[in-house]
Image (tube, rainbow, N blue to C red; front, side, top):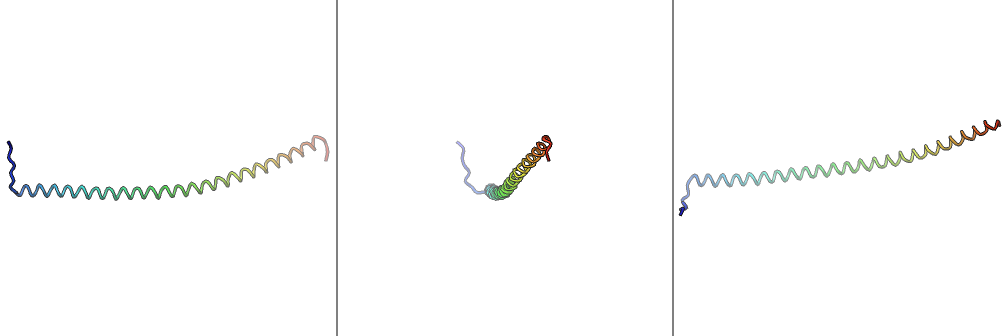
Length: 95
């Protein structure tokens, strides 16, 4: 059966210190990683809000363009109607 040496030596102290230092380093790395992850999430949130504002502006402009197009269609129909009336008068030979 193996025996455990229960004496404290300089090597044991250094090994324990290195283990604690490694653990502390890993904990610090996790905190830094979490902070960066939070910063990226905040950045994505800001980007999404900017995109939503841009989309809202584009929707407004699109509606305006649709209304303008509808008005132009109405004007074109009035012009075509006037041209037909003129053609009809010409065909009849009237003034």
